[in-house]
Image (cartoon, rainbow over all chains, first blue to last red; front, side):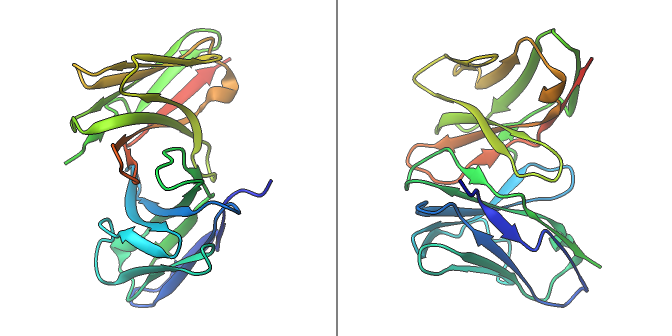
Length: 114
Length: 112
């Protein structure tokens, strides 16, 4: 079956521009997560969705970052006024149930801010 | 403050031998631990997990050991195969929590 998909796979943008990253979770998965991995670092939690609501946004690094999820499916992570420190791989994951620890990851979007 | 630490950035093992990857954690609220494997240009894939009520979980060539008193877990791969060459991430979650806290990863190279 189809796994988690993300688009674009690569994005190069100029400092100060806005970017949108998209995630399509596995069909039927109610929980969706965004993480990012900076060079040489582990995965850093950003935000968690249960359905369309985001009960945990604690990992969003600043108010330039926002995310939404519609129809209990697709999610978009938006970064406004990008900075060079935003350069990272942004990973989306989904899981079947609210407290399912086993999360299925997409291939990620590599964001480079020049 | 790194709550999950993988102190070995890389490990090189001969094919057929045992690979041991280590992970330490600091948060005593963690009650579930997972190992993920990641190939280049792919997302991490779930490998094996263990609940804090157990001290060992085995799945084929992969075994995870948990030492709660030492706040330490390890992943054993035996026998190691060249296809096991990847980055291995240790992750932990607290009871009722949703997010996973990841270590920085260990690059495993299995030489044939």
